Amino acid sequence: MENKETLSNPQASYLTKLKGVIFWSLIRHKYLVPVFSVAQAAFAIAIICGMALFLPQLDDTSVVYLSSGALTLGMIAVGCVLAPQIVSEAKQNGIFEYQRTLPVSRSIILLADIIIWGIASVPGVIMGCIASVLRFDINLNITGQSCLIILLTQFTLICIGFCIAYWLPPSAMALATQVIMIGGLLFSPITYPAERLPEWSMYIYNVLPFVPISNLIRSALFLAKSISLSDLIVVVFWAVVAFILSLCALSKKE
Image 1 (cartoon, one colour):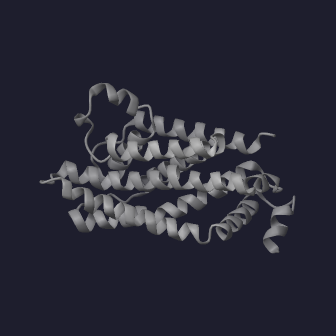
Image 2 (spheres, one colour):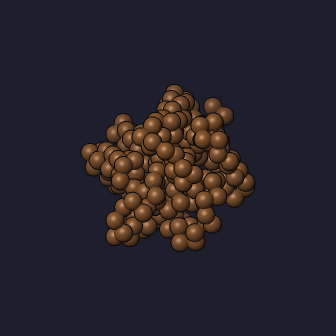
Image 3 (cartoon, one colour):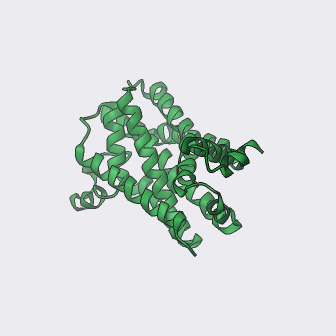
């Protein structure tokens, strides 16, 4: 009752309304968020421990790519695969339309969902880091900068997932998310160096957000190299565009 009054009160502050919508979303996803968190954590561990079995010898480069790639793929799984599926389901059962009738700004609705799915991806990031340290005895650079990079990548991937779910019909959404996941797992230089792919392919990967995201994580958390400004610009660009398109989808009139 108190949460309902908070949302309907026009005098309530932006942060108060955001808190109310987050609380409402947590209740709505009280079973899904824990399950997805555990699944993502297991996925990160499987990437680190499982893919290492395919490599007869693990050098320092392979270790860094597997560790950073596991974190990246885990966040892609939550932001660009699981979250869009739940949003698409919400569109079909009427929850999406109900959200648009709430007496709050559309940005509050969008930010609340981004925060919820960001929370859902945190256990996978933590377990991926722990698995990397235990499996490879690797040193992590946990600083304010690396944490900000993680938050930026989460925000970008979740916004992309929402954008896909809001603008595409369910069948096209399912196809798009599977292409992203399979492409990221098998055909993108996320868990292995880019030198193993044809040179022309990097022109494509460098303008899409996924490889730049993995580069940022590798640079910030594993100190593989200095942070690339071009990678940062690409990721921020995709974050802004995806957020604006998602906001437009929430705001458009039928």
